[in-house]
Length: 391
Image (cartoon, rainbow, N blue to C red; front, side, top):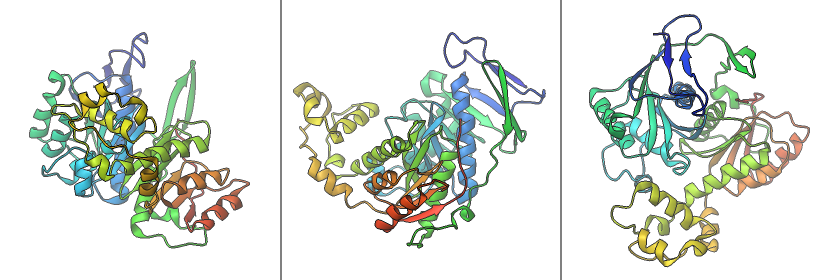
């Protein structure tokens, strides 16, 4: 089959809508359940490229959570700590490496991942399908599904959940095209391979780049390769913890992503882990409550009706002093940028979120200022020489 009709395009008024192979060959995807839409396929195909490259670069199963053609989270399949199990709501169930990757990708920014499209590098197994079944999501794409996983996913959303299988051997034409306002754009696909060699040009005084940080930098840059620009990505221990996408100003990207990274660390604070929720409270409502609890406006929104409907015990506030102390202990975070940092202010903001390792293309007239700011804080700075804009 070389064509698939869609319900509509980006919006319900945009009809007709379809995906097809212009050369008449068969589509590399097969819909096993549901009826994916235009944006679903944009997320699915971008997401699968991301996880396939993460798997190739790290050798570990990978997962990503996509929303509106940018990742909300991406991760490789490292085991979860007890704290991560609690903050990701997975309990004590046995998890495969792929399930760990998905839990971490989804757990990076749970509010942004609400209603996401999931991409998996490996065939979806039963453990991963169980985790997916518990979350609000639009669909999943993977190279294949075990019979047990497919049965679980087909039962989601009363049989309307979107399940897509993609041919892992498929390779697209090296020239890609799209139309804007009736004009056809053409360019060579971005086939740039991101590997360890990209981070050899260390321009900072500190040149110690541990293996774990090197892997995190690869994850950051591969994630940015499929994130709408301008974009920056904070990574820690094999998972993106803060992604700033589609901002016109790079410092706004850095602040946005840094705020998400801070929230990820604050979710591990003992006061947050100790919150006692009402029995039966939905996962999304818990996420919203946690976001409010760690936010600056907590005292303004904690009316009696809010805490009584959400918690069994009224929470003690997490003070600004406690947040500052907790975040002040964070270190070892990596930061990638899809284009050069034009000013040292990006590094100043990154430092507040525990960044120790930075990768960016370089090439700004103020590179010396950026290098000096990194040196001031003992950070490692790599110039990759490669821009990764994605639109």
